[in-house]
Every structure is written in C-alpha cells, then in structure tokens.
Image (cartoon, rainbow, N blue to C red; front, side, top):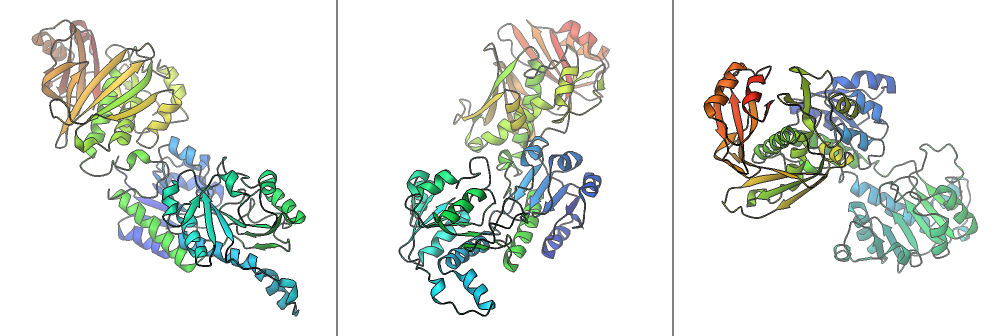
Length: 568
C-alpha cells in the first residue's frame, strides 16, 4: 500500500516547524485554523492529509466528505476528537504522536501532586488577598506515601520515576503491561481491587474508552483510604465528576488535581471552584517544548510514511506495520491477487474462514499484512454486467447496496459465468480486516516454517460454511507475482499474475488448441498461457492477454467449465 500525499490541511494551531518539514519534502500545505464545520466539510475533499490538535472535531461526516483523505494526524496523544472507527472503515490511517507530550504531561501531573499535598493553590490565592494564614495551610510530606498509577504507559512510567525521587512507593495497574515490565522501574503491578485500599494518591493515565469511563466512582471511592487524593491529567470522564464532588464534600477524598474535564471549558465550575481542588485548563501538553516536539513528530511521521521508511504512531493500521518496505511490496501484491482469484473461483462458496499459511523465513512476520492484502483482493472483486463497471465503487456506506444489486451475499461473491472482475480502490490494508470481520469472515495467519520445496510462498485457504475448502498457492520472484497451484493442481511453469488476465477451469482436460481458438474468437490476443496439471479430474489455466480484455467469453465458456476475465 503506497501512500501519496500531495496536499495536507492543518486546521488547528501547531508549531510552524510542522509546515516547514512537510513543505521541505514536497507536500503542499494549507494552514487554516479558523474553519467552521461547514467550511471544513466543503474543502476537505481537496486534501490527502489532515493534521489537527484537539479543537477540530474530525467526525464521521468529515471523514466521509474527505474522498481523497488517506491519513489524519493528531499532533498530540489522545485521539478522542477523531472518529477512528469511521476512519478505519473508510481506509484512512489515524496517527498520533505518542511520545511528544510525555514529559510535559508527566511533569504537570507531578506538579499537581505536589500542589495538593502542600495546598499551594489556596495558599497562593490567600496571599494575593493580602492574608498570612500559615496555620490554615498545613500540608503533609510525600515521603513514604503510596502513589497508585492507573495506566503504566510512557507517561505513567515517567510519573513513577519522578515521584520515587520524593520517596514515594509506586504501585499501578495496566492490562497491557506485564508485572515484570513495571517491576524494572520499581513499580508493583496490582489489580484495581488491591490498589484502592492501599493508595494515598491516585493518578490516571489511560485513554477514555468504555472500560475506563467513570473508573473512579462512588463505589471505588468507598474502597479507598479516607483522605485519598486524586489527579487527572489524562481525559475528563475517567473520574466521575459528580462522584468526586460527593467524595470531596464527605472528606473521603481530601483533594483533587484536575487538568481535564468532561466538558471543556466546563459549563459548571462547581468542581473546579471547590476549595480542595487544584484546577488547570488542560495544560498538560502546554509547554513550548511539547508543542514544538509534537509538531515536528507528526510532520516527520507523515514524511516517513510517504517515503516508506516507517509507520509510527498509527492507531488503526496494524497490517501496515511490516508492509512498507520495498521487499514486502511484491508479497502484498501477491496477497491481493490471490484474494481476487479466490473470489473469482469460489462463486458458490459462502465464505466464513480464510487461513493464510506462510512458508519461508522472509515471511515469518508477514501474517498481519498478508491476511489483510488477501482480504483486500477478495473484497475488491466486484461484478460487472455486460462488460460495464457497476456505477459506484464500493465503500462502507454503499457496499451492502452494491452487494445486493450484484447478487453478492455478504459471505460470497456472486460472479456469473464469463463475467469480468475489476479491482476498486476503496478497500485497503487499513479497512479490509475490519470489513471482513463485520461480514462474519474469520481470518487467521499461520507461519509454517520452510516449505517442502524450499520455495518461500503463501497458501490461501478459503473455507465455506459447509466445510468445503479452496486453496491457492503463490510466490514472488523479484517484483513478479507467480501462481504455483490451485486446489493442488500445480503449474509446472508458474503462472504470471499481472495485467489483463483470463482464468478458467475445466472438468477433465481440454485441448490447448481449442482454448486458444476460442479466446481468439472472443477477441483476445494471447501473450502467454499456463495450464496446471490434471488433478481430481480438473485443470486450471491462467491466460495473459496482450490486447484489451474480451467483452465476452462466450466461445471460451463453451470449451471450458468456468471462465472469468480480470485485471491483476
């Protein structure tokens, strides 16, 4: 999957270095931070890329309007303002800068912890009012206290290291981090139920997802020590605000440091004005260094992706991770072509499972992108009536309608005898796995080690609901994609997969002379023909056509059992 970016829109305020890096690498940049929603919808079709911070809401309608949109970049960590699900279904990469804000957010968290323990906010306000109330603002030491960190990623780790310097014991929870990993930086991994009664301070560093929404609520506050203090520099809503206010009023929570809120700015400032709350207006990433860093990072990530150097920060394009190098591109193309051939040759199959088997050390880490590329080819295959392309290319919105119009069941392809398959551009390595899953197709990839013939290769097994299986096997030679076998029928000379192609199957054998004569009568000019061995009373053939594809395969269909034309 090659990403080409001609024009990028920056719709939020970012450091000028972002613009400079993109322009230096030949990308046209428009920076407009004053766009209304309607204006954004009107101009977004002109752009291949979009860079935002938190102000622009990249909703599903914006993504749908961005017909040329290939990538959305968030100059920051959280992507709450981007409809990542809609982006994925439309094949648009969503990328953030996971490390750019780390130090600033960690430092701000530590600042709030210190401010809470020494009443710095209230004490400062008292001085500004001309008061000298030393006794009123008695604080406590951090030394010997237990800090619970919910979310042990980059920021959580940096908070732990800094607060350990104050003599705090750090404990934490993160379902994605192994206990031995955080033990390496002196943080004990505990379950949430074990954390609540031990913590003197709790800080949260997770995304806001259904599993973390209202993670701290009336129930969890009741399990905590009386007088626990909490800090949220992550996302508003992880701590239930109404429950926090009740805990502050009752004394169950002695103080809260809040940098984020459910509504920003809040419509109701009751919580922020509470005397035991230190509140800041979402300043976690608001340092000169962080703003420069995230601007540089997102621009460089765009450039690296376009140049095929790396894919960093993408939250929804796992199949692309190992698919960008020149060495892997031929294998990606092979997967797409095997998927397309499989779709052509299994028109009666109600597909439910796809297994991709990988042979050879070069494919040991290829499972994700090979499975995705096979599904791209399978899903891209559309029906054409009388040689005319269906009027709309499939996408997430219209594919159910087109499938019904084309006679395609959700789990089968519905091509009729002699019809042509074409590849549309709406499916790619980003959205194909998601769409396949929504269609009820289970995909798996298995690395099998060396093949018996020592040829690095890919075998694709398409399984129907009745248990029937259709297998295809292919390989690459340099940049060329080759077909080795269909249903165990081997090609003594591997068939070339590329360009205008005819595919046929015979029951028994059919004379090559009859096949060539039929193709000529249909108007095809043959440049190469590869015929498989006879196995289980059937053969397969791949015909490379030098001319345009015939508009009909009437004569060929009279000689063979099934025939299709396609562009591979």
